[in-house]
Amino acid sequence: MAQTHWHVYMVRCGDGSLYTGITTDLERRLGEHNSGKGAAYTRSRLPVSLVYREEYMNESDARKREAAIKKLPKSEKERIAVRR
Image (tube, rainbow, N blue to C red; front, side, top):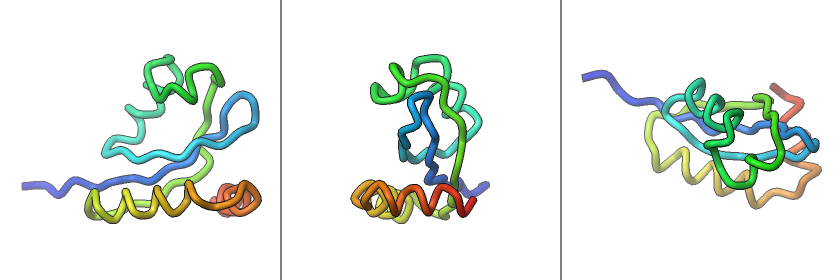
C-alpha cells in the first residue's frame, strides 16, 4: 500500500495575507481555494498562490507543524514564505 504524504502549506491571498493549512493533495487543495470551495478565510481573498510547503509522512506531524506556524507572528511567517 502506498504511503500518504501530508503537506503543510502557506498561500499568499489576493489581499497579501498568508493562510496556512494541511492536505494530502496539494494541487487539489489549491484548486479548491481558488474556486472558492476552500477555507472560509481564503474565499473572500482570492486568488491564492502557493508560497511555501513542507512534506510529512503522517498527519500528526503535519498538524503539529501547521499549529506551530499558525502561532508565529506575521513577521516570522513572512520569513518562512520567502525561504521557499
